Image (cartoon, rainbow, N blue to C red; front, top):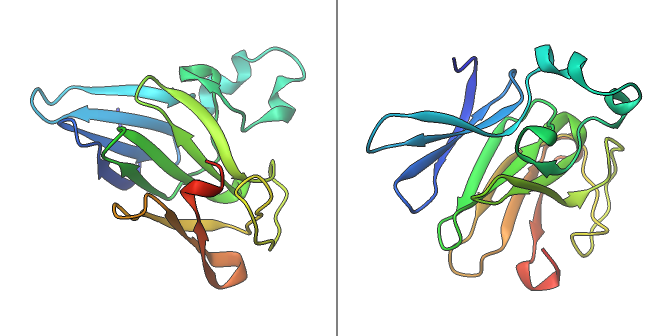
Length: 159
């Protein structure tokens, strides 16, 4: 069951990525069949199943349900490669989710807010909320709400 949709974006392959915000799940809707699958993340109710000490590492990168998110409020996708990009708002990070469900942080620092420009590996954010993909350049634009600015992540600089 989907709990709270805050963003959707087509993947260019007949599917819609869905940000299920408070469940902390990234889902995919097959627009042909209507089937919804969880691609990445695990719900808070499942976080108790983590090994001791792992809860402190949330959110984290990984494959499928091994990855975790904070509440995410916006999503966009690169329709050329089918990946989704998520503004992991309260974790202060921008994350990429591959079509196979691999979650990687491409910008921001583990739950530590900041206001630093630079290459994606160095950039920091404070509550990024909106995110958009530019199909011309493949760059990402991020509404960095906590810093009251729009930031650009340049694809050729490393993500």
